[in-house]
Length: 405
Ligand code: GH3
Ligand code: MG
Ligand code: MG
Image 1 (cartoon, rainbow, N blue to C red):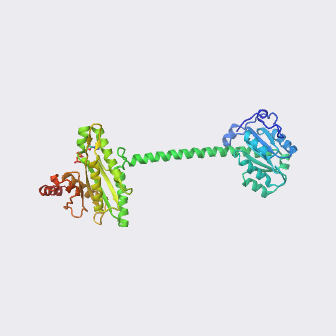
Image 2: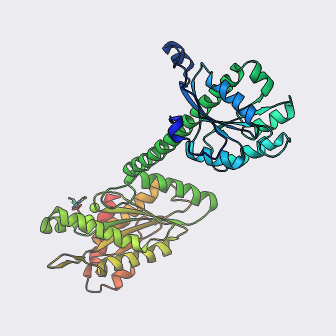
């Protein structure tokens, strides 16, 4: 509430005005009642009385100055322009509008005046005074935002009606402001909570080093994609990718460079993924990719592109570059292979095969024939890698793999 000294802040000599006399002694409500009511205390109130009839205004001013409920600082305005200016300058708590303000005797005129003032100031409470009792006009004024609608005769007869109306109006405005502040605070807190929730979600669902989903989340997303694939009979493939000889990178260049190598490969994968593809860090240097709408051949071709991309983009250090490669095991959804365990088992077995076939390659099969080996195009692009063509080695791998299945 703004506390202004009447003589010093009343700036409109040209207005028909009469600053209030010294206010009566302050009467504070007992502390217990304040606590019980939980209502804001009203000690000082500033009021603008708007009306074209100076006698009536003077009467209201003297009524207000006699208030024992609060100290009242009163200003007068004889028309709407003066009231607007006064309201803007003095920011009163309450504006009392005589219903004939400013030009006629139409009751709605007061509401029009209030609307006009509300365009500039919304903090004030409005009380409308009228000569005749008119329920419809009262309801209309209240609907339009007035705090109260009183009969002048009633006020003259018992000013307490006006004091109570002012007190209630000011308290309501204070509570409205408090409510707005609380809503704003809650909105801010909500925003903060939402941000914290997002951070929490990120922490619990992603891997810090690569930014990919963590193992728990990528597996749960895989379950969802499997259900979707089975329900709509859509192809779905799964890939386990593992960096080749990663331990050597750690051992040769240290753990920090190892971390950078992991991030580099994660970024290289990221640049090739479609929007619908999902990827997560499955283990130390192992990634799980979920490729919806992708059959075995499509997944195999995609992995060849990934493999090629990694091989062609070495990790750049200040004085040298480290060529990295990765191996890929692919499996695909089918009536026989219809669970995450089966898909992962076959992808893992194929990755294992890719490693034993010489690494830096892709092995994809649907897993129906457990002994079937599918050589990737990477095998043909690396003819010097004897492990991909040497049938003797191949058969020994088969034997070894059989023992591991
Ligand atoms: P292979 O080609 O058979 O996969 O050989 P590899 O050396 O890549 O595989 P191995 O399982 O022997 O070693 C994996 C290494 O990855 C061992 C582990 O210390 C390292 N590693 C796992 N997680 C991280 C990590 O977050 N940062 C770093 N720098 N190294 C990691
Ligand atoms: Mg590895
Ligand atoms: Mg590994």
